Length: 298
Image (cartoon, rainbow, N blue to C red; front, side):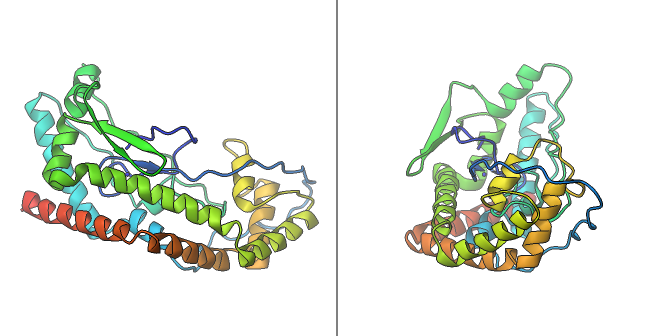
């Protein structure tokens, strides 16, 4: 885990918005395929697995895009300061959504389905003014007919060309705004390629086979943990549902998550090595925003 998603592949996995670098809200997508889970008997299930984090390597794309750092907090604070002043000049009180680590966000990536029985926090909506919402939106996002666009290899996104949000982004990014938008798309595409590549990795296939066998022993037919999560009904209680309990038990019993993340880390490294400019440009533009933020907040 950036712009509101304008591609057609499904709900966002990460909306960085004011959470990540506080810029552009380009959402990354992580898609999966559905799977049918057989019903299993309900009597006397064992206690649900403990919701303890599993130590694993941090895939490099996740480390860059989904981790909130002190500089991200400065950038977001500077953006809030700029937007608040701009909106006040237009006669509106701006109330930004709270900053949260993208790794803990409700739409953060789950490359291997559930990792604990805890449900992520619900997304918090930005408080909107009661009066004149159209004027508020126009002041914040500008003329909806005026946009700037950026393209990746297969996808494109658009963002406001004017308005208080765009003005704040230009103050922080200068002439790098479109490239920053493009980088979010390219990182999403790289993340997706790495995940697709992982599905053909021999070591990862063995992990899935072990998990499948464990699930079959529990009476559940499932292809893999990610598609199992996508097949669950909305609002399911992860701690009580027999399918999710079996999923977490099988991950624990087979030691699934740590080696799965190790293999994903390797796949992401391979993909990023094919285009070294991605990390270099991301790092450079992030540093530019941090320098601007320090001046704005001084």
